[in-house]
Image (cartoon, rainbow, N blue to C red):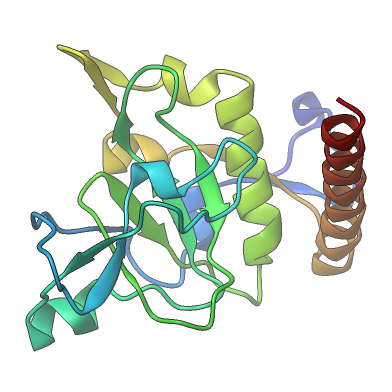
Amino acid sequence: MNKTKADNLPESWIKTTLYKILSENLQPGFAQNPKDGGDVGQIRTHNVSPDGSIDLNGLKFVFPSEKEFKKYTLKKGDIVFNNTNSDEWVGKTALYELEEEYLFSNHMTRIRVNTSLAKPEYIAKYLHFLWMKGYSRSKSKQWVNQSGIEQSILASFSIPLPPLAEQKQIVAILQEADALNRKKKEILEKSN
């Protein structure tokens, strides 16, 4: 982690990379065709909504081995990053806040941050902001009908990191704004 005057960050903030704030290596998910009657839900790209939340509509179910279940389980506080999708959707990010333990597909990357350095909520919001601004698209490789972000590129994403207390305040403000936007949307839908 480093701080230079050129960063234009508040004095108490530092500039770092995603890699430097991880608690464990980035973990890509696993591929398995969903089967009728599968016993474990698998978060896929369509389960990360454009607003940066987990949406369980259309959840697919798989039959993981015990080893797969251990390796690819999502736990509350994990960050889910959409690493492979169309140009438009690559980089969508959400904080996993569910109590249930689901798995995640090979088009997703699980991010676990060192909570003594960063709040998962802050990092998820920041990565989602990068997607909204087109940064993720600019860092992706293009294939036929798909874009993808390699783990080494994701790990090198620059992160402006305020102290934990400020991260908490920023997240609270953003959550309040999200709640107001949802309320506004509900009101508009009811009035039509």
